[in-house]
Amino acid sequence: MIDVHVHLRDAPAVEVYGQVARSYGIRCCWTMSPLSQVDLIRQALGDTDVRFIAVPDWGNPDPLHTMGQGFLDAISAFHSEGSRLVKFWAAPRARDLSIETGHPDLMDLTGPWRRRQMEHAASLGMGIMTHVADPDTWFETVYSDQDRYGTKAAQYEQFERALEAFPVPWLAAHMGGWPEDLNFLDTLLERYDYLHLDTSATKWMVRALSAHDQQQIETFFTRWKHRILFGSDIVAVGEHLVIGGEGARADQAGTSAEAFDLYASRYWALRTMFERDWTGPSPIADPDLHRIDPDQFTPLDAPTLVGRALTDEVLRPLYAQAAAQFAQSLGMP
Image (tube, rainbow, N blue to C red; front, side, top):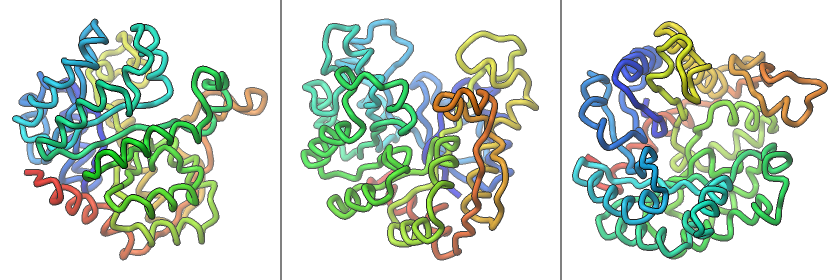
């Protein structure tokens, strides 16, 4: 199996992730990690192969440099390390960061800096990865200010303009940002034959894909079996191994054993959903349920996971073949 969407940082946490990956059959992962940790992550993963996706230096306190010239430089540096894919984060939340810098179009997919960065990536023979939109639940709550964020459908206007401008291999994370609407994804994949999706954001995928009719899931995954890549969105960071530690992820785990269970829950949920004829509670708390209906759900409640028991004909490309073909199209070492 190949996981095309993880976030690895800090060797001790990466070692724990490596144990989980091997336990669940992951022989290769593609990670969005700091450039400064490339060698450490390679060493920490041992026998698990790894590819690096070019990302900005999010630790830099100057967002204008980070998302401007700094990202151009980072793309070149990652390319030198063997990277052949560049991640452009364009969630609606990027609008907040851009406005704070005084450049509202700083992180737009069609903005001048993004265009320069995509041109540079394409000139190096690299593909493009994007995060567009967010869950429907967020547009009902977090992004309810449409004057600021626009509608969910509006997020795809700039996305399609960028797709048309750069006909290189594309990977749209989180099932293209709209797993709730498989008919919409059908039309996107029909129009752009170089567009691929990944299944990352496990918590979101379990909630959204479990809500669909079984026949619709089988039809969609069968039709696009060579253009849907397996991804988990596991985040493995050092804060997970520090009891009482600080940081955005520190409340999710505090020991190696807890971190192992945290990472394993993502693979268990995805593999159960795709492989088994089983229905039951997801092992992953989903605060979006509480966000939508705080009277019925707590932040620790989880949705029902519906197993789809997809056939081997679908699972083989989903788990490895589609990613291998995508990598081959980029000459990814």
